[in-house]
Image (tube, rainbow, N blue to C red; front, side, top):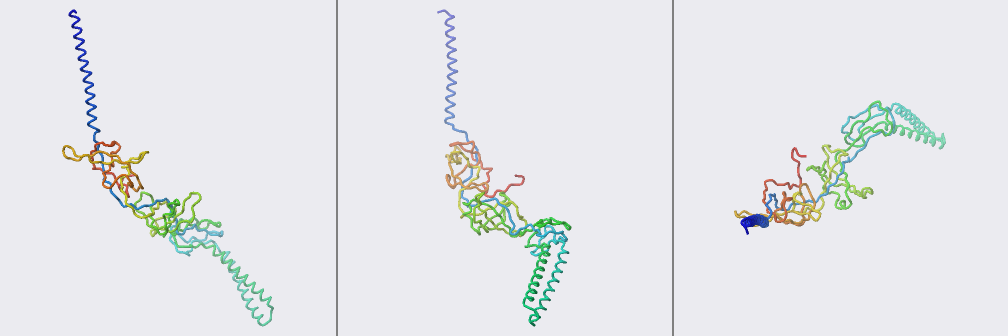
Length: 381
């Protein structure tokens, strides 16, 4: 074997050793990295937590309805005529019997006076002939004719007086008038709306509920009427009536609540939300609704479970997923019926980036709201 061949063999052997060392180091590095991640586990994640606690929970039902006046009508006359006088102002408060409008009635009043004179003459004739009948100067038949004429004349007077009275519009009950719809000199046909009259205190709130919910409502129950669902304060009244049948179209039951309206600020036709307390107060564990992870296979929460202490003696925590059974909601809260117990530390923010056994860093500088009656802050919508 010559010198050149020896050098070639030595060079190839050296290259093989170098390549083997490189590949061997790569395999060693991958094995060590895998072992490191296997022993190191998932990196810790920062989350917020809240202790689970019991709150008093009053079951309520809510329904959308509308306000209705205790008494309300669009006032009109039943006879035609020309408006002679408008005796009210728009928006005025009136009492029952107040004259609101008069039609021109000169011809009718003249005819009434004529009929009254005829009736007076018939009465005089009857009195004179009655005396003659007592003196047996005339027959019973003649006296009967005089009596019939008197009754007919008086009936004609009453009929004409009723016609004259129909030309005057009076308030049928006390309340607030709306906007005037007619003017002096205008010709009105029978049934033309003149003005609306509404008795506003008290006022009704009518709403519909399913029959199953209607079975939980009784006359006298407390009812809170709000202008919208987000309004925290409302007007308190009580249930005053339930309809005796189910509406065939909607399959719901009409319920009426009565509320005081001394300031007359609530107006008929206004849409409202009516809340009624049903049943006895209960106690439920409550959480912010955002703490719940909703899944097709069940709703879950993450708990911050104690995991000993670190080298500095500080407590460590890890995530544990727990299935829960949720109940009703109110405001920011949701009731938890099963799955956690009082005192459990529940993850309320950051749960989307964790799974079972993920190490946790707890930072509660910012907490989610758990308010049964949230109020929007200024600038929020």
